[in-house]
Image (cartoon, rainbow, N blue to C red; front, side):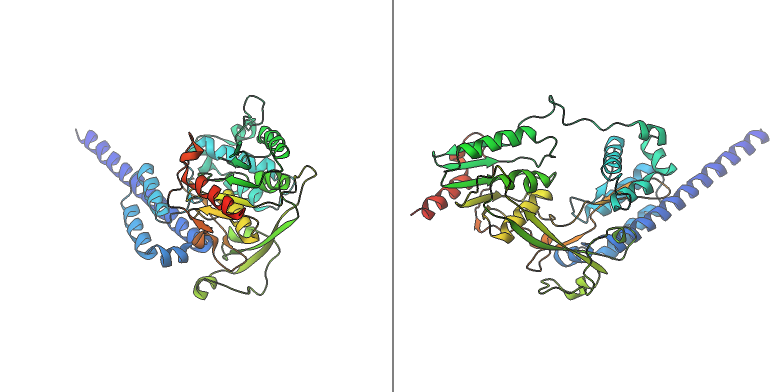
Length: 401
């Protein structure tokens, strides 16, 4: 009987010890998570100003929960709760193995010849025992992992939609920004459509609902087939002095001064270095050199690389923007991935504060339409019932008078 009691007591002590060890690991991971956010994430101060984010209260409440956390699932939920308060589409926990392996392999292969690129470097940092155990794969499985070939004939379908409205206005709808490899059928269709209708009186580009993808779709494939001359837009990226922000290199702005900073100087002071960049679109050999009016339809779902297109056309005044305010966060670079050292949880995080030529934070101001339309809902059945399209056609008709 005494032997059973001793064994039971030992089991209780063992379980209690394991629980305390896990709690300590969760606390260490949480503190690392918060430190990484504070030292690298670019929108913390902006969110406190615009969204009434009470960061100190958020992290204290979350840490209190971690102190009594007993399972990985509970810890993940606490991490998710903090990230949700940031309201950023580029910042979240990587939840599944397939997504992580795909992203890691994509970056590793894409930047293998640029080993100093931050995306290649951060993948090296993710190859830890903790990450492998948390997501259920190992070094060999990762080495053997082959990226799905999205560019095979059976996988490549026409994404864009093109038609002539009222017999004289070209209309192109783009639901997604595909990679150059998977947009070949789009390219063939659009080249043929543009050439056949280059005498049209106007062009409407519709990217409502387009949440992003690959910016090369519009910068190297779409716009070069349309524009009459080279267009250049300058933008700025600012980074904090954190471990991951410092991995991004570029043509640094050493004096950290801009002609016009249209956000609080106290926020600007949080950034240690900046990068200036030019986005340039040049007419392709098969460009139709379109000189007539161009209109871009946007809504709140236009985000990331699609937002980059909206901002590019807005800043260059190459198109009239019609619809609603966009989703923003289109100036910058790819988000970073970082792992919590004990649990192996991987976090995806926005890293750049993108600022446009006018000195505005893109994720704050977003892209404001030149012509606001109350209803930006896409009508897939009838363009005649689509308020945005009909408003644009009225603008075109008025322009022609």
